Length: 394
Image (tube, rainbow, N blue to C red):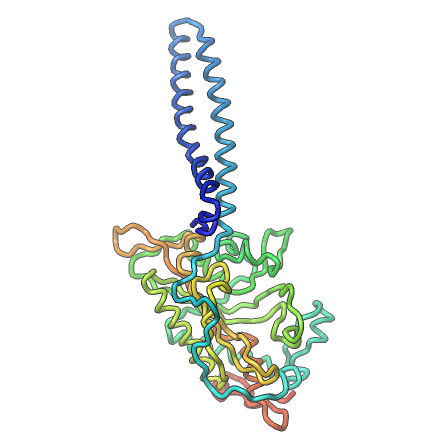
């Protein structure tokens, strides 16, 4: 899609660019002229005659065709580059400024932060010695908490129609481009230059590419996946309290929800993903609020986005723990994900949506909201059956 702002600011420039794209028609005319000249030369040779004028004319036409082809290729490259930089259009329901839709649970409690509470279970020093700053070892009972949380999350999502998946974390450039992370967030992505691969910052990238280039059969949609993976982010520019503990690190684990739906179902699917996120936080006893993100603050691929911010007693404020976005057909167009509404019908682009289910930040919220006066942490009962310890002691 073209940038409406660009069209308004420079209509003549856009018009000139579009006129240049019509060079293809001129090339076709020249090719026809080239063909006629070739036929004239062949006819002259069959008659035992020379055709110097026709030969010279064909040489001139061939050179002009070559020049125009180069011009068209240059214009198409520039147009593709410009189009790839355009973000998705925000939904009408995306507000001009951030909106807090509701608050759930008892917020306002203060206390120690997760690093104080969990002690050696969050081993930042060993992580730094091994890999550099903002890497961590999770150790002991905290590992069992994470595994229990992931297993419980998959149980909940499977009951709601999501297919579990463990996704690759190394992806090609086209997967990042297809999901809108390139060209947009290059500064946050780890690149393996020798292998032309990138470390993915979310399993959304892999899940979105699961049906790349496919035309899905009628009745297949919706398709819902729950992906577990380690995630890698450079977190360039992060500073201050966010760098303490495991709130903002270079490597963490996450369970991600991802949906492929028909276009008229995507608004409802966004609300469905949000409801599941709220259900998970409520089951864990974490106070939170739902924020409708402003249109100007949306990522490149999102048409609408909700953040769920948990109350963090250690920071004495709400902090984002999960988000969910409707990317409409933005990713599907880039990745070529289409479906047939009915047998024999023309393919249409699907809509895609994503939403975090649980992540390391969820564990931070569990620890800080579950802290007791004696310094121990009460682990939500819902996780006990999946192997989580009833209590954490740092």
